[in-house]
Length: 164
Image (cartoon, rainbow, N blue to C red; front, side, top):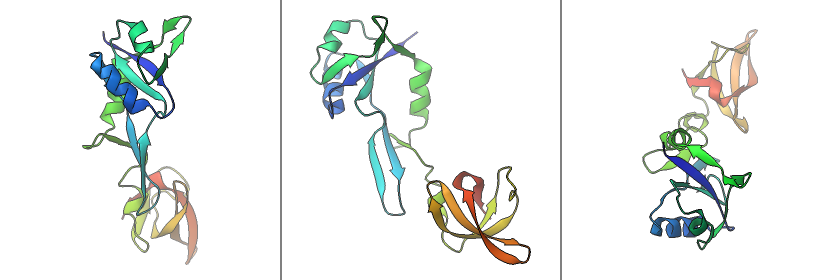
């Protein structure tokens, strides 16, 4: 069974350390993320700053002495290892460009102001249709719902909305 070591790098040295560890013949994984912060702006970066994963390390001394590496995460003097399944789970979330999206690309930012939406989930507004009227905060949307004969603005979690 293969296992992955968690390697702590020097500040802003993830790429350098990964390149040097690859030169030692190790398989290295540095997960990258993208996060849509507005309709036009997308942030991207390293998912775990100062950390990367190295597979099936045999020579711990060489890894610790690699340029750009601060140390190998360990517990009780033994390197902490992750099973293949943990890295496989991260990789399964990557898009075709190799990025992990923190927010679904098809969530809040596919809704346009004025678009009809339906509330899902199991909350008090589940099953109701309304009109999207914009973002109201992180992972929350403003929706105008017809309540008691008038359009009432309600904040709904982004994950609970679908296009109607």
